[in-house]
Each structure stands twice: as C-alpha cells, then as structure tokens.
Length: 182
Ligand SMILES: [Zn+2]
Image 1: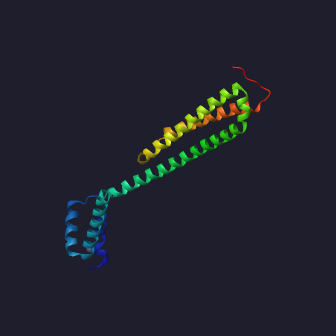
Image 2: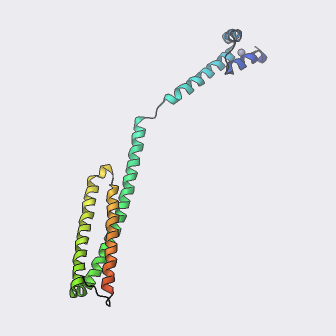
Image 3: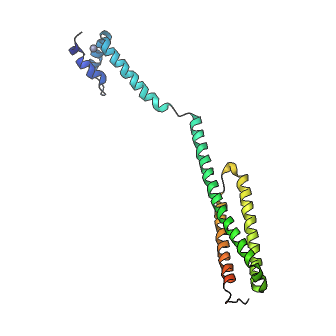
C-alpha cells in the first residue's frame, strides 16, 4: 500500500473534531484493511486512556502522612531551638543578677531601702525561675503536640521584666550619691 493512501486517514485519526458519518465509515473500512493506520489509532487510544486515568492515580496515603510528620518534626525542632534561646537569655540574665547581687550584697544590706529592693528582686527572680521550670516541664509534657508558643511569650515577658528590674537595681547600686526614701 502506497504512503499517499494513508493521507486523509492519518488526519482523521488525529483530528479532535468529530468525523462525518461518511468519513467515519470510510475510516473504519480503511482501519480494517490497513495495519499502519490501525496501529496509529490504537496507540492514540492508548495515550488517551493514559491521560484519562493519570489524574485518578492518587498519591499514596503514606506519602501525605510522612510529609505531615516531617513538617511537625521540623516545627517542633524550630520551637525547641527558640525555647533554648529564650532559656539562654533568661539564664544569662539571672546569672548576671546573681553575680551583681553577690558582689554588692554588703552594700545592699547597709540600706533598708536597698534591702527591700533586694527582697523584691529575689522574690521575682524566684517566681521567674519557677515559671521557667514549670513551662519547660509543660513543654516536655506536650512534646508530642509541640512546644507551646504561649510559653515563649511568657519567657520573653519575664525576661523583659527581669531586665527592667535589673536596670533599676543596678542604677540603685551604682548611684551612691542618690538616696531613695519610701
Ligand atoms: Zn492506512
């Protein structure tokens, strides 16, 4: 069979438009006789079937679960890191205060005002540390559900409070010329 005889049939097979009844009948007849065109038609059908079924192939359930698991693990790691940073800030702050108070304790005890300030400070430091421990204990308890962000906010709040108090205490301690009367 000559190559030219396939010509209208090739176009008809590949055409996206519906064929006229005459064209359809002629093509059916040609497909019956011509192996090359039948092969073309069959491979085209195969491709069309493939496109139709492809979107129905859903990703494995495991894939989604594993992806979510990894996301959660990464989030937890990030939150833990943040928690440690805040913990570090609070620790350094507390350590600086302890050193400061330790070095100035004699001076502090000399003045009733400073002693009051020291007591207030020690109390707040104790509460802050207890809060810190409590939040970390909760964080350990909630490890599976992720570190509570509220804990970080609390840490930051406590740290800010400590910093202000630290500054006030420090200024009290360093300004020997100024005296406070309550
Ligand atoms: Zn043909």
